[in-house]
Image 1 (cartoon, rainbow, N blue to C red):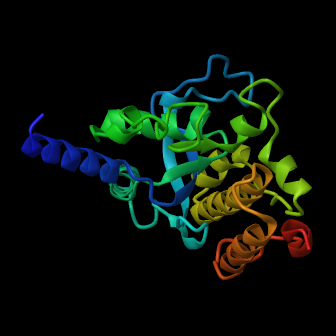
Image 2: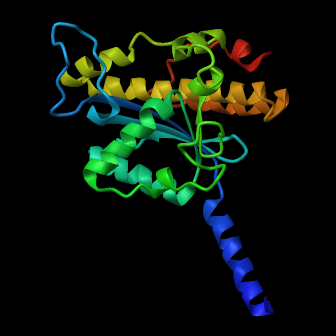
Image 3: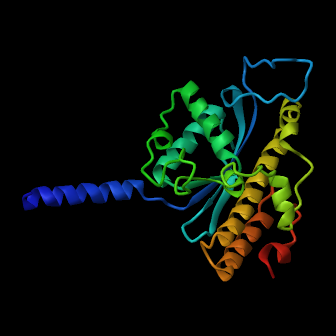
Length: 255
């Protein structure tokens, strides 16, 4: 191979590495209601949960952390946007920032729901389907593209999955009274600010669990965890939707 071709090849490899580089972490949670056209199999039996293709996103909570695990922005892609605009904003932001996505049951719910909404709206989402090895959002056994905490803590299905509520209780965090089962009724009652506050609170709880899981698996030491955790707690206390969350700081930070 001549020197010019070698230089071009090296430049192309460098470009691909840059394009695939992960930039921080996005903790994500959706709240949804049944999409138009969904009908329960048995209307007499309450509580049937629609398949992922039958959901409409009403709240798109997110919290971005940089590569040093420092919290940057806790918010909601749904603020001042309709569903299509929120999904398109997320997809564009994800393509630009290339973060690892952190969720609770995201592989089983949140990410497929986003993909199905992209399908309906005609929004290309190539990062979901064509991730590089080690950064593939759909690959179960690597956390570079997507880190599903529920799946990870259940050893990828080897043991029974645990509810987020129970895990946060272990860490000194009190789960609020609202649950996912309440979202549809709240939304239809036009109590939409409550739905979005609940969504952002779930994002905050997921983020706090994630930081403790990173300590558990040795990503960082106790001192680094305590620094990142303290910054996250400060952000929670200064955000309108989360400032009333009840958290035992000493227990959470292991002090």
